[in-house]
Image (cartoon, rainbow, N blue to C red; front, side, top):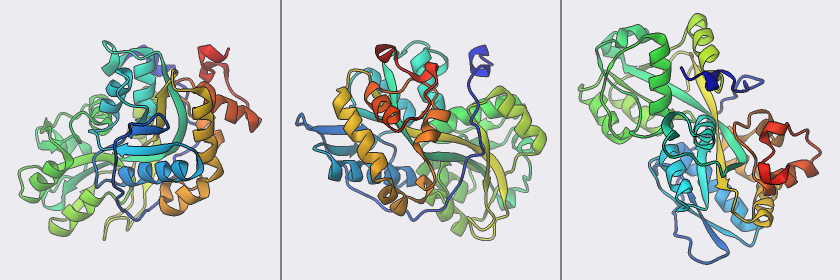
Length: 330
């Protein structure tokens, strides 16, 4: 395990978890100077809806129109942000940390100009197997055909890191989540995983056709993983989140929005301010965002804040650690 990850600041509390109603919002393409685009995730996921709700609120309360672009997920977003192909990018704590520091997946494509605007909500890893597979523990996945999450997504990478620590070696079958869902239903796969906000539609749909069971981490496994990967924190998926499923203990990670340092400071200030001053609208539509505060952004930042966002958080008189103040603001 890369030694730099062990020095990563640990989240100060357990990640909350909520249920949501999933919807969809159409995405557009930004062209005008007062229009911005944001790289999101595949459509049909809870996160696409959550990202879109934030974009809608910002567009309604600033001069800027935020259009949402479907992408393969946070890794693709980071790469495209580094190429200046996106104005804003949906990201997660580990991706932001790695791309800024040029380590892990981004050793060859670092982006020292990556900056954090805000966290939207925590996301929770789901590791599920077919009930008829009779697999009850992570060790039972050894040698079995299992999908580690969508190709190139954060869930795939987290699964690889966690399973490596646990010594679990499935026969990974890499594909999109919709193809993985079909593979579980027709019996080609014993299970699949995804990093998202529960209930995840794909899991709900598969469960109705071929019953699933969520795998749960033991206390010993939690301690082992979070010691090595402190950007993750224990998270509970409550009983009944999926019909007749028992409570499962998993791992969560904060997800949010990033930009390059070159994005205009005043623009980012207005975007960040509009998001938080109308946060109750986001939370009303996207329940996982409820309870997340500006203080959570500061406490769980894994790469520097954008100077425009920093100005807003300073106006709130939050105590900002030196390590998340961007070089251009020091």
